[in-house]
Every structure is written in structure tokens, then in C-alpha cells.
Image (cartoon, rainbow, N blue to C red; front, side, top):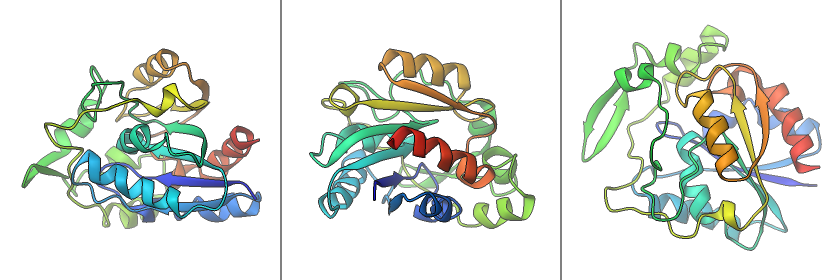
Amino acid sequence: MPTIVLVHGAYHGAWCFEPLLPELASRGIGAVTVELPLTTLEEDAEAVSAALDASDGKVTLLGHSYGGSPVTVAGVHPTVERLVYLAALAPGAGDPPAGTGVGIGQPLLDALRPAGDGRTAVDPDVAVEVFYPDADPEAGRTMAAKLRPGATGGPADRIGTPAWQERPTHYIVCADDPIVLPDWQRRRAAEIGATVHELPGDHSPFLARPAELAQLLVEVVD
């Protein structure tokens, strides 16, 4: 059975992939979810590496949003067969965790609040419309209630050799994403030489379109 290791983005946890897991299982794909500490890039990458150390055989490593940054660091692990960036950051060598010139939508920037210790949080009053506008409203509210403060790397964090230089790479563009702007996603995917796929809709297809995302991942793994 092929296995995908799933790495979440900022403010989220491994729980965000729960709607996707049964869709993958029904298509014969195993999944492992990683819980990032959301502290520094190094510690986030170590969490990914620990999951890869525990994996049995080759895996596909997927990073969503900020999760693309620790995936870029940890994805050189020998168990990784290919990378998938899902509406994700894909920083290059010497870059900070977010990369450079990333196209971030104003709705997310307006929703951020300081949370102390260099962390930020998302205003709960607008979290659903920012992260999950295409999802069932009740499902969006349930997920938004689990969001947590976090950091997307520290000021001194830098990328070494990016894994996308070492592994076959796919990029899934979310075509109506209000957070990581779609035109930037397409441009960055071309810059890193990724095979590009597109899904309609918002930044969180694991909630709004889990069946469509799972089917696309079947094609990627195959």
C-alpha cells in the first residue's frame, strides 16, 4: 500500500486532515499525519523527520501551506520518494522559512493577531471565511475552533539544500485560494520544476473537497 505523510500548515494541527483520511483509505492509500510544534523551522522539520524515520518503506511527503517549509528541509530523507506541495510555500536555498516574495492574500494578513513570544494567531471571528469559505459552514466552524497560535520559523532560520532539488516534485494549485495567491503558486511551481495540478476552490481542500483531493493524490502516487 502506498503511503502519504501529511504535514499541516500554520495555526493548524494534524486534525485538519481527518476528512481526507477515509477518502485516501478507500482508494488504497495509507496516510501518516505529522503534528508540528510550530516553534522554529528546525523543530518543525525534526517532527517531520521523526515521522519519516518511523515509516516502513518509501513514502510521498506532502506539505500544505507553511508545511511546505519543513517538508523542503526534511524531504531529503531517504524514505521520501516524491514531494507534493499543496498550496504551499516552497523556499529555496538560503531563504527564510516563508521564502521570498510570497504572494499572501490580504484577508489572512488582516486576520492575524500577535500572540506573544513571536507567535501569531488568527482572529476567530473571521477564521472560517479566511480558511474555509468553500466548506460546509458547521464543519468550518468546528475546524476553526481548533486553530492555535504558532510561529512560522524563527528570524534566523534559513533553508539548506531544498528537497525539491533532490526529489520528483508535484505542486497542487488551489485555483481560488485567498491565502496563498494562485498566480504565485503557479509561478513558484514553475520555478522549482514541479509537475503542476490544479483544484478549484479555497486554501483547504482537505475539508471542502476531500474526495477530489484524494483522487488527485492517487494520480500523483501512481
